[in-house]
Amino acid sequence: MVPSKKVAVVGAGIVGLSVAYALVRMGASVTVIDRDADGGNASSGNAGGVAVTEVMPASIPGLWKKVPGWLLDPLGPLAVRPGHAVRLLPWLAAFARAGRSEALPRISGALASINEHAYDDLAALLRDIGMAQHISRTGALTVYEKPDGLARDRLEWETKRGCGIEVIELSGSEVRELEPALGTLAACGVLTPQWGQISDPKVILDGLRAWLISQGVTFLCENVERIIPEQTWVVAHTASRGLQFETLVIAAGAWSAQLLAYLGDRVLLESERGYNTTIQDAPVTLRREIIFADRKFVATPLSSGLRLGGAAEFGGLSAKPNMKRCQTLLTLAAKYLPGIKGCTGSEWSGHRPATPDSLPVIGRSYRSSRVIYAFGHGHLGLTQAATTGKLVSQLVSGLAPSIDLAPFSANRFAIQGDPRLNDSPYVFLH
Image (cartoon, rainbow, N blue to C red; front, side, top):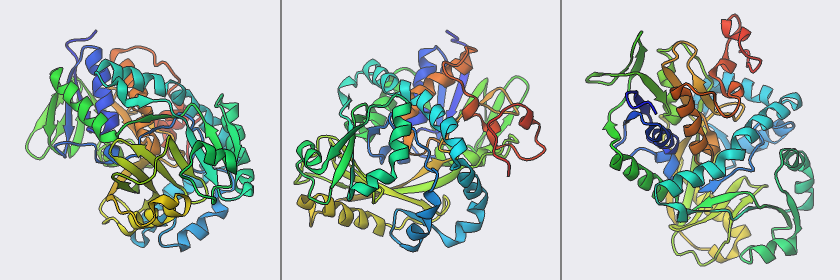
């Protein structure tokens, strides 16, 4: 217990709130700072999956063959805004390097090391705040339009098996027996029973925020513009004042990289905008999350409705969303789920914080031990949030982290000539 420790968490999404929870449990005095009064915009729109089986990086061997076709489709699963393309080049170069076959064991091993604790850590957090009923282990079903799609993904499934993940291959009839709402387009599939599900991400965010307030956590609706480490403090400067803390945690999602400029650390972090449509009172029932492998989107049953989510769009933080993608998700989903044809839903878009190797950034700043990073979780923010919070609290309290944090260090983004090249084998050279 460190009751005198004054800690700020910049960011009120699911990762920031989970960090605040772990810090409260270790006895710290916690302040959460976010530009939005409620925070958690990206977190509230996720699909609700506790995706502990997702140990593959987004960049995998052979992916580059599919990218040109995706980019040529204006509403396909991947888009790059023309005005952002040049700025994205360093990130894309590192993304390509992360997809080399020799990098796969390192990245998948690192993801497995954090994901193996994720369900239990999140379930324990929810149980502690009185929300245990909002999580369950339902499994996830990945479906393919043709058997050769499953064959093309053989590397993915074998890698997952190698990480201790249960993988059950199913025929088309077996897929429809599990999920009767699926039509005949689903030719085969894979069941991963270890996948978990929450009832609704916004319900979890609201409940966790309310619990933190009840525990005395201060929430400030301010924009942190720069962070200045000093000898005995770290100062978070907003438009109107400077706030002093003994330790500061940056958990601001896709906006985190902007704060690192004042610290001398450089990371490759991009906004990967996602979209979803939620159908209230949907005329079909799903028992678990379904992942449509060929079209790169998902359908998830939530307490608020049937959520259809997907797309990866790189256009920076200021570009306006292309909400036509939400209608595209409805059109695609109706091909697999005929019962929702003609349905409408509420639309959403938000920014995922994406690193080129699909690993989050967790650990101390190279420039100041008083600043700790906890961002870049991509599609796995909800999944890895509670475990990230536990790791951050261990760093703050001076304990050895429960997993090796070297693969998640910001040092891996060192540039040629940077002394950090001597500190870590996990390096992207730019």
